[in-house]
Image (tube, rainbow, N blue to C red; front, side):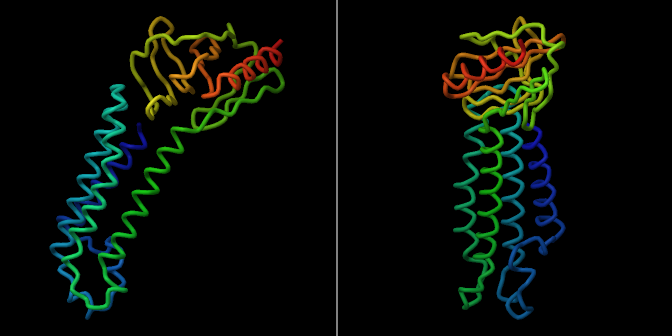
Length: 238
């Protein structure tokens, strides 16, 4: 969630800079062109288009973050997926602003490649971040959870270890991410309160690790893998 807000802030600042303060040095390709070729680019129009695009992307990322905060998976997912067609539209619209005859050195081509690469990296980073399955180790009477929401849980801090077929109702997210049915991060759950979820919501069962201040709920998409982890945790903590 916070990643989306940070990215939204970056895109908004860049968009305002290009749109209103003529930060054309941020436009890939244009800042490396010769002065002669720059004269053949309608940089005012291209800068306006680029600035508006970045501001729109910032708004979309903000909407995605709000959707995740409110638990609206459809809103969050659709807003992020809309970035790709918008980028394609930008590439098409930007073609008319570069009048250089040498197509191999067209500014819009470099802009398109840069934007597609940037958007692709953002989308892939979000997908990989949200889709990673938890890595769990048991050693020296401790459970070690690796990853973004990783932590170490000592055996003496564990109140109860169990495996359940269903989840309590999720009330809200405090710091986490949802990608369709993949939940990662800190949530508030009905009846049990604070919980760290590292789960695929539609793939029961779920391993519950209860400590004095919160629950940790973990599973894998493959139920057999979840059962193997539960047996490993049970054996390692006995």
